[in-house]
Length: 278
Image (cartoon, rainbow, N blue to C red; front, side, top):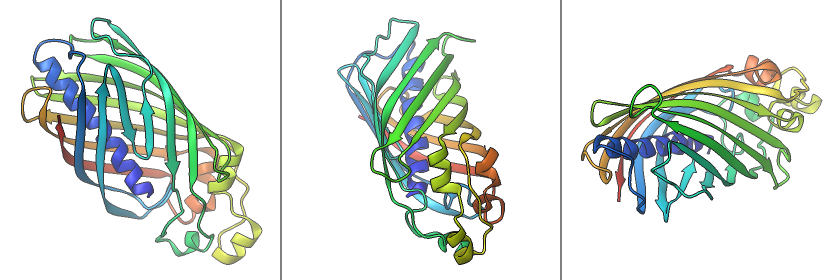
């Protein structure tokens, strides 16, 4: 399920940018109108957070705008923007609720040592996302965006919080190709680190990994580059996309035997697919 999470998240971003690129290509901000984007593709991602084994995975995208309010499914995390769009403004704000699921290590695990630690419970995370975007940075189609998502598990799995701020810059290249570069960090609580990255004495006996008590803080630092190309040349129609990303776990998250001995602190992701906007 972690694999599907990555695929959905990255495809959702690509589809949104594809629609934006088509609108800019037509010579201005997109009108306030209802749209829905659906997509399908394939990607490659690590088996779990901190794994060194990879697999091919399917994925999809669901996102759109209804009566000026954006919604998007970022992986298994749904965000609805409570602030209506205003294409006439140079500065755009977003703020709204987030609800999501986390299935890290709750299913089949390839690594025998990590699998011996046992499956973890699924988390249900509720929270908020806020952000600001400034248009016309660098060139007419360039946009600089800053945002952050904060969530808390309410299902009693890790029963804690996670905060993910990011900065990205996007711009149109030519009339149909859109490129975005993004950098971000993740912060997680002690309880989150303990649940996903600690090894208990009993777990050490079962897995052969050393006992470890993980503490929270800066979890990871990452970057990604995404490119989309509109096939139709308009806001509606077909688009294709490709993305590559890399992140590196930090602190106790990287020092955990689950990562240091059985996995890898550096995580890669790649994806490509096709989307259609109605």
